[in-house]
Amino acid sequence: MAEFEPGPFKTDLERRTTGAIEALKHDLTGLRTGRANVTLLDPVQVEVYGSLMPLNQLATVAAPEPRMLSVQVWDRTNVTPVEKAIRSAGLGLNPITDGQTLRLPIPDMTEERRKEMVKLAGTYAEKAKVAARNVRRDGMEALKAAEKKGKISQDEQKRLETEVQKITDKAMVEIDAAVAAKEKEILGK
Image (cartoon, rainbow, N blue to C red; front, side, top):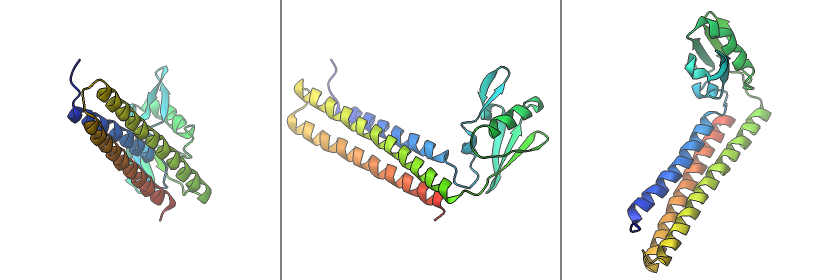
């Protein structure tokens, strides 16, 4: 069996916690804030050619104005299915068709809807924190196993456990910062 190496071990933990943070940031970009964001339409699936396809495989999405999205459908025959998919996606958007282009005005958000979005952002944050804690748990278990097998000393185990905790603490700070920024954006403060 290969020797336990602290360098790759630490790099793997950092990569996994960074993955949890990146997943959170991606989830947060999909939350509607009252401003146009092309990622808002990422979850939209369009039924064409007998199957469901992501919208970005059928059209170009752009944000020409702060409160307007533009969807340029590549194939004229797909305009109606794209429009139908956007309307039924539950995003509260009503497309205005202009040839092969759909204009999507972003409506103002109500205070109640803003609070729902903040709550959802908190849910996403908790999911990311759980993922970071799982990475910490896996790291701690790997260190205990390595110490039991005599691959590292107890002192080395304690030192690396401190490193694992630092990685986790750093991830928690980044998660909190990302969610705080998104809440500020959602509430318009």
